[in-house]
Image (cartoon, rainbow, N blue to C red; front, side, top):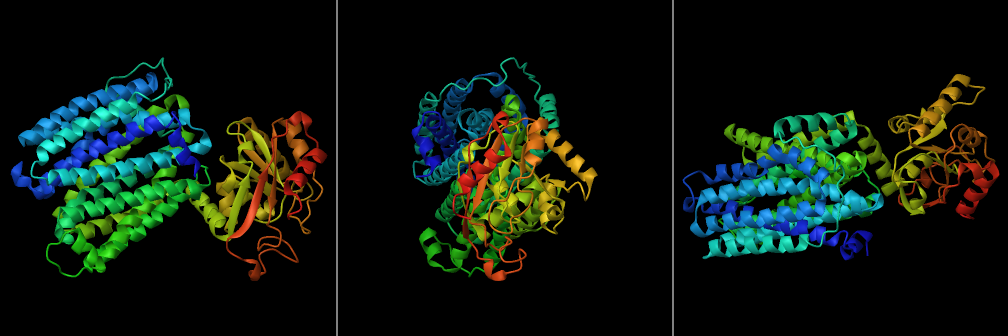
Length: 625
């Protein structure tokens, strides 16, 4: 069983998971019951147009995220998080009592007020939700933990939407919905009582209660961390994309697919299943590291299947109004279903690594405020989504054309973000290499320090050794490499964006050699991982050659632990020098070739000699070249 499922057995994760699950479940029972009423039975509640209300109400729910996230982030950093979680659940009970009145009395205004207040409830819980995980999970558990949380959230969304839509269509739906939402709120409070203590990150923080000035200050502070800021923008764009689609599902089911409420529920089911499946797959596809290479992969899928959804929607046969059984009986509808589920899957690939990146690259003392800034931007993008959708409808676009425009603009946004932070694209190329050309088996990865400086050392078998090690490492590594390899077309882009350090022999370019060792010292002093191949070049024989003096020179200047590694299975591959120049024998380009990376325990600088290091790496490699 995957390690991420093992978390469900542990108190540090399980009560928090169910508190979040029940909150998301209740949110969606309530919201979907309300939206189903105004979409299919608007005349019972109001004279306003159901299509307009279905677009505006989700915007009203997320408006508190924009207004109050900055304050919520400060509260989550200043106070103990399990206490906040329980207080939020008590607030949820009160809000659901108000909502119950609205459902029973068939009154719109209590329901609208409760919708806004549930947005405030989620705003308070949001910073706790994502700042809690780094306190209780190790770095290698974060992707799996986030995946479980996202899977649980979207399963809760699915079940809540199905139940909410079903309750809204019952003859006594108002009373049934009222009892359900109050009961779920009580269960959420019960689950929150099991959450373990989570100490405040910054108990001395003085809270700025002015949401406008704190929002501005929060965003200004986050923008100084460029990678985190752009990850937040990428995350927020996903919520623009997702909010645009989800807000239109009721009317898409009714007007385009000519279906009833059961078809709407079916669309929600397959979309939520896709998100949950994609989120869970992230841990397996990422190899338990924060693999941002999945983000471009997810973006590609969001565009490809979003575009195909438009073409599938415009090629449907004319039908009379149908329920979900009749809908599934029509083969042409299966293409629509496949597009929606795959949009969900690739959405999971896109969003889970971004959340993990934000958690790992942000200041621990400000983590809740960083998440609050993320929520502010998410809510802003979702509000904009509602406005853009209404504008495009006024310009005459249909719902399928809105989906097409969103999918195409997704490609523009992705290209823009990846041009600003090429690390995303670099990691994507590395990820593709490791999941197509090779199948990588990693052993001893826990021996790579989770923080602080270290020198990574490995045997040198092929031109892609650095890429393979970078793919396996939970942290970025700055590799020292021969300036000629550094300059290889295409690979040069990857090495440059990975901040590799080109090095030339003293007889070729003594100035470059000095600059390289100065840069290595600077990187280690800043706490980075630096990688070096002690042989000084790629092997021609498959054996581990004698080590040069580079490692000793580095350690003498900056004493740090040295991590020995060994690559196995790369000799005689397309990128190795067996029987001649590398990359010249196409018959060796076999996809999914199994390779191994063995990582040994760090060697303290005081115990290191070139001979002992070579002995360690030879032992790690064993007989397999």
